[in-house]
Image (cartoon, rainbow, N blue to C red; front, top):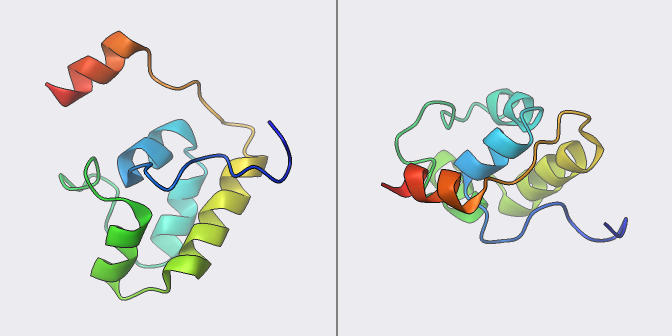
Length: 88
């Protein structure tokens, strides 16, 4: 991955971000967000979550991207079967 390329797209959901880069959970909790275990996290993108929690989207996105880009815990994306099972 290019260093200038963000680790996740604008379409990534909060659930996907937390599962693939567990270190981002710290950022989420430090911002007072309730995304961990939230049934809406698989549907909310960063913009949605920031709006719901009254946070500046750009700041939150930068914090999440920075942690995800340097996270040693980075997990592989789900296989198509895992993705399909999560959607079911």
